[in-house]
Structures are given as C-alpha cells and as structure tokens.
Length: 101
Image (tube, rainbow, N blue to C red; front, side, top):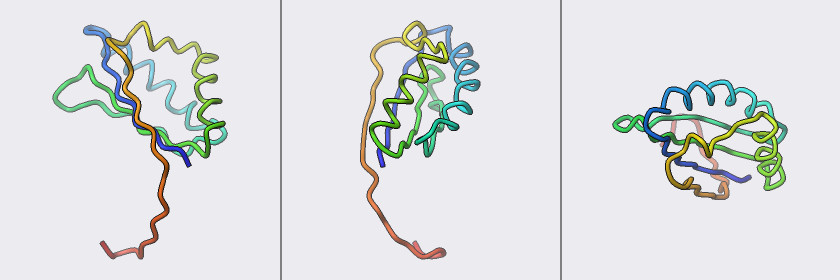
C-alpha cells in the first residue's frame, strides 16, 4: 500500500475557491479504484495551507488518480502558491488488539 501526505499552500485570496473545488473532488477521488483513503484538512492557524492524507493500493492506483484529476478538470497549479510538498511512504503492517494501546 502506498500512503501520501500532500501539503499545499494556496494563493492568498483563493482559500475559499480551493476548498469548495476540493469538496467536490474528494468524494469522486474516494470512488476511484485502488483509492483506500482521501482526507482533506486545513492547518488550523494558517487557512492557506491544506493537507491531504491519501492511501492507494499501489503505484498504479496513484498514477490512475493523477490522470483522473486531470480528467475532472482540476487545475491546482492556478490556485497554488509555491511547489507542492509530497511525502510518500509505505504502510507497515501492525497488529493490535482492540482496547490495548
């Protein structure tokens, strides 16, 4: 499984437009084959910074997601201020029993 944390800084004045655009995109992304999680957050003390937590079954599912964003007509570049900051990781299996820390 591939996990991704994306940190995006939105141009000043585009915060609401970006949020509304992505509120429409998030449910569609969650329906993509191979998407396991897609969560949008905003930094509490800086409304220009959004963080996305994403999980995909594999690299192919992530590649399909990027293609799907283009097909949805999402133009992130026009709303962003500076480069996207992505951090990829691989999920490590951890077993636990419910009720135990």
